[in-house]
Amino acid sequence: MINCSDSIPAAPESLHPSLWRASQLARSSTRCVDTGHAALSAQLPGGGWPTGALVDLLLQQPGIGEMRLLRPALAEVAARRIVLLQPPHPPQALALAALGVPPSQLIWLRAGRTADALWAAEQVLRSGSCGAILFWQNQVRSDSLRRLHLAAQGGETLFFMMRPLAAGQDASPAPLRLALRPQAGGIEIDFVKRRGPQRDAPLFLPLSSNLIQTHIPRHAPVDRPVTAPAPAGSLQSQLVH
Image (tube, rainbow, N blue to C red):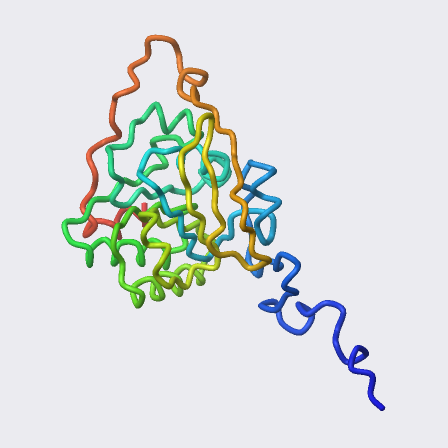
């Protein structure tokens, strides 16, 4: 008689990296960048933000702390360009410097049409020349998401899509989907999707509320915007330089 237990490997991931036990976090098949928040990193496969993959950040509304959440990771990859695509507000130079992102490393892109914004995101991902891209978009078709995720897999760029909470009801190829809601002193994170066990209880993550004041000189103007956004069509020359 065959003992079935002898035929099951102790580590399913030894058969394929996409396999894992339901009770454990999956191993990441790509390089991960530390989130800078120990409590959050402990809940993510690979212990950080995955590169070369779409990450869905579902926001109750823009400006609830998502940039402070991403600050350590953006500072880690700021040796390469950081792309802000369709941000809801003009990025401020000193605020970005406080986040550890030199304004000289920033590319701010605006597109008049959704199709142009999607094209720009795909070009950034396929170029492999940028450390991160943050893309704000309310509505994206599932086939466009799959195309972007496929483009991301060809490199090691951090790729965050900022979308409304309601988008969490739609299917997405993103291996990691987090819902963010503001709470006093920080944000509340729900794990909509991750490669690992389901977590029902949200994670509260404290965030500093006076980041700018502690990183820039007193009386320095904080409302100086980064140079005007570049049109998506001019992207190729910026990636080359």
